Image (spheres, rainbow, N blue to C red):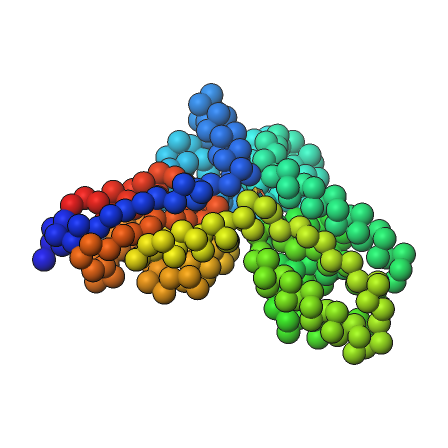
Amino acid sequence: MDRKNSYGEMGLKVEIDPKSGFCYGVIQAIKQAEDYLKENETLLSLGSIVHNKEEVERLESLGMEVIDHNELEILKNSTLLVRAHGEPPSTYKTALDNKIRVIDCTCPVVLNLQRKIKKGYESIKKDGGTLLIFGKKNHAEVNGLLGQIGGNAVVIESSADLNSVDFSKPTTIFSQTTKDVDEYENIIAQIKKLTLEQGGDLEKIKSHRTICHQVSSRHPNLKTFAKKHSVIIFVSGKESSNGKILFETCKSSNNRSYKIETCKDIDSAWFNKGDTVGVCGATSTPTWQLEEAAQCLERL
Ligand code: SF4
């Protein structure tokens, strides 16, 4: 049976989550890129401006070109966009040396975290302790954070990474902005336990609440939204770490949750007649993609 007809007969009721869509940092970065491309033919972006293939392709059609750090080394006299994730100081130095103009779209929340980490490092260095960053190894934001302190931190991706830390000494921990709040709390609890076991002082543990509100507030919202519907269609790029986490939140509230990148991934077998379908997405999912997914479901 033709998919279009099969949905039509199903009479699905579709609602787009009003609280999904790009976060503030991504909206600002894309706006700056679009404004620049109105006046200029090309703009180089250091890494994908957003972890969303469709949106990157749309911007590429306007003249954006994605380059990596190796290409930056040999680039001269160009204009470069630094995305919301931020960059280490070495990137700005290369840009200066190579006479590259930088359009800096580092999100203010990330900038603030970079400053806090610098300060935190100065303080923990005096105490002879360790600075930890709860985040994804090699993620652009984490690389940008490490760059602020010459790489002098331990990146904690999972509890296994805590084994290499000496907790008899003082510890200060920050989180990447897009991590899951519960996972972070769990890591902090394990740090406290290990500190006690290794004869450290609980008073010397400083944990900083640095997960972005735009991410953390989405978890309770998504839980409520996912419970409200029979089926959840979560739209997100494969590369989005925030997308993976938020999708798990949907799944924990509604086991009929499905993650898609585009309409092509939708399978009619997921639905029953008369289902209500909630469409939502990550902080890197544009509203137009949510609308497109809703139209595919409604094209009936
Ligand atoms: S998730 Fe938060 S910190 Fe990250 S870019 Fe968006 S607004 Fe900025």
